[in-house]
Length: 239
Image (cartoon, rainbow, N blue to C red; front, side, top):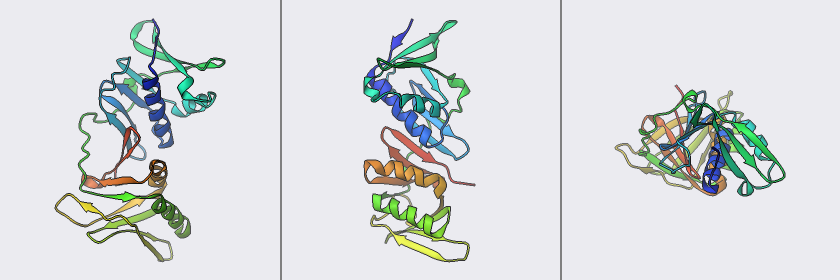
């Protein structure tokens, strides 16, 4: 028996899928624990750990690039009706989602949640050791510095006085700029220094700053944590 998803569930699914696709996360799990997905290659986790009271027990989505391409056929997600089509042999398993926009509709085949790389869903430590605010101007300067220095990496140095971003090129030239925000330290140390892979981080910054200034949190083991919309984004440090 088919059942229609609420507009709230459709919005959550599409928002999470859009962000996941932009960050290279290929699969998402939706269930009573929340929403989560993992890009193993880049060490990027997106998650929203809470019970959204979905109309289903569990839903798995992969091929998110394909879903995004098909969703552009509709002018507005708000006008779409989405119906769950269960598997004939097991009504608990959602085999397809039917997207109906009126004059145009399509079916999208779901994935088995157990086939998607899961993350520790109840052990997401979000306690920051350091944090500071990043503005649209900061993101623009990071992008300019990356282009000017032709560098894929940037060193971030913070202390009680300021937060400094540093670029270096193959010739040994150095470019520094200090951001306006002060760094807040919540742990025993009041200084931090880590190197960011901008090929991975700059796209995340550009998405986050679309909603305005955002807070960059540095967790234990130099894990970076940003909130984008309803989703938490965690970036693991490079080994």
